[in-house]
Image 1 (cartoon, rainbow, N blue to C red):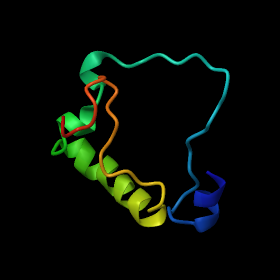
Image 2 (image 1 turned 30 degrees about the vertical axis):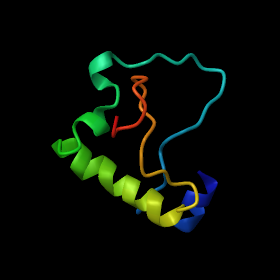
Image 3 (image 1 turned 135 degrees about the vertical axis):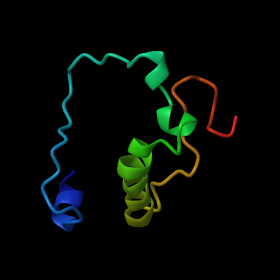
Image 4 (image 1 turned 180 degrees about the horizontal axis):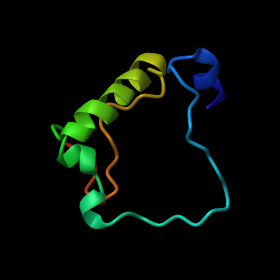
Length: 78
């Protein structure tokens, strides 16, 4: 978060916070692996794909081309 903020990649400060010790509740099944199942959905195209592109460009050493899916079926190509 600090590195992204200092890089001034985005026009405004990043609003996401990272907190520990909070309960985590998984989303409903139809939300799981949404990008892998619906890559052409307007929300994905407008909001998520640009961020994934930035991740690949800014942190190529951390980028993984195939996502690990939460559904337990492996990667998106499985």
